[in-house]
Image (cartoon, rainbow, N blue to C red):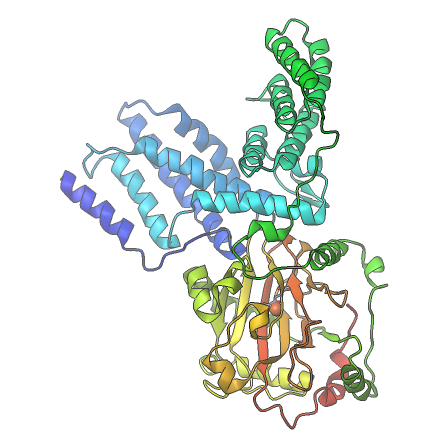
Length: 555
Ligand SMILES: O=C(O)CCC(=O)C(=O)O
Ligand SMILES: [Fe+2]
């Protein structure tokens, strides 16, 4: 019986049809996790009930966790923000795992509730293609730091679950300390101290509960962090303030004495806690692309502008087409003047968007970052936090209609073929927590850190990009062009179009662009890359006039 049980569990565990290497890299996969949590709750409820009916004592953690999680799952909200993702992953990686560990029983037989409960885990793991790991949680904390760095949202609001006008469940003090510790582990004292200070102020103001962590303990943690950063005078200041409130506290007095002597012994006290250079480069050090500081500064500034009001946005680069424009555009290109990015509104229907997203969904959960690298290069895969699916016009003839529309709006040949093609398959992307695509050029040439494959030799390079927006995003996620100071806001049903190459075949190095980190929402886009092949006798732009009623180039 016992051997049977072990065999049964093992079969379920190893019979994964596909393996998800991570969950954080797409909001879609995180949503799958959230949708399956109620099955875990049901399994835990059943486990507790059976144990109680059998007169066995039930572990206190299980009962308490069930109570809180039942409520959360009942009122489950979509996974929109990094806070939602953090809560979800923390539960799956730490708490649910702890439940199964508690119920793990090597001596049990198959008819015992422990086996049934652990089996339910294997079934769900099998269904999902994996179980979230510590690395998912770490990536989510990284995303929080990256988003704070780029968007500079109010940290105290953030702890209360508020990101600009979006409101979700607050972080618990223990969760904030967890995040602060992760920053400390990454030698990022600035973030660690800022998160702890925000927590202290929130607790002192009564906005967050101080359960589990007393404010005294928090003050001691902050003081010691300042001391580690050669700012013992700051530790002294904090503790002096605190000892006034708790004159009897011996620990505080001891700490104070120690920091006072440290302050005296240090010749040069640091006066300001330096914000580390936590730009997005440092988060993915293995990339082969080196960014100029200026590019990153502009990238961040453009991403941030995205959060300003529509009114402020409309002052930016703005350009309307008339029937006379195409000629003017060609001239502008030849004269090496500012390149243009066209924005088309309502260019893809709800029905087509659903088709692209739904058809990709299953592929997204199967595709791993590694599979993605087979199409591009390692550097390309590391450059973005998203999941990717490729849909071919041949396999899905419904897509041909969209492809002919691309031909109409661009004036370029767009037929998709397996070889010597005018275009590539549709690439559908869903971004993850803080998901982004770092600055890059779409053309495949070497200097952009990409290697070109056989298809590039046969079909030519990516002469132009048409990118459809398949979702709205509440905050963040704009497409920005740091070298030409342009930004395209995410708008469901719109498409952006630009040339990646000059008419002489050289890559247009002004067209560096990036997907800004997604702050709140789930961003879906689809690229249709147009190749050089077959475009020789085309006069790009000419056909735009036939479509000018859907053209709006306001960026
Ligand atoms: O998502 C975005 O805004 C940019 C995506 C992009 O540039 C790409 O997929 O090549
Ligand atoms: Fe791109």
